[in-house]
Length: 164
Image (cartoon, rainbow, N blue to C red; front, side, top):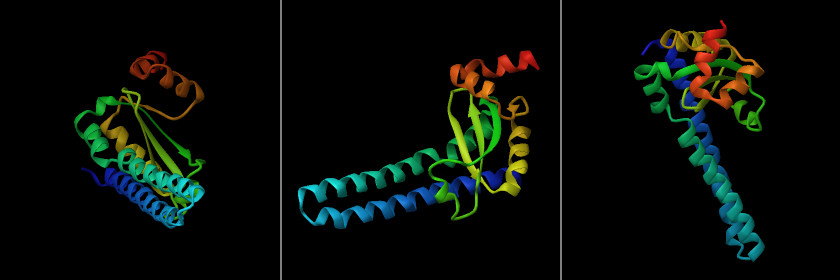
């Protein structure tokens, strides 16, 4: 694997680790509340613990580097659209831990999207590394592309190849 793609996977692993750590912290925060024993406290504590589990499972599943690695190395034709955006999600406070405030979005013909937090100075390098593996992919964001990708990801690439 080339060193530019390595940046992508390092960021993916950081995001995964970060979500899992936050999930564990939230999960642990719920236990003392449950231990109080009152019905209201048990309900609130279970809700908090469940929220922590969502973070853990979400981080584990969403930021799985082996799935993306397989696509980029074995099935690069699955990559149909790549773009970057400034991260404005509700999880933006998590990004401040390692100052990644941009996402590189990799969209597949299956409809799956990988949004990987990348530090600003590495965005261009990572996108170039992806497009070296998948030169057929459409690069750049527009609302029309977003709509067309959501409507039919399998036909997305052929639609934009015909119009360019």
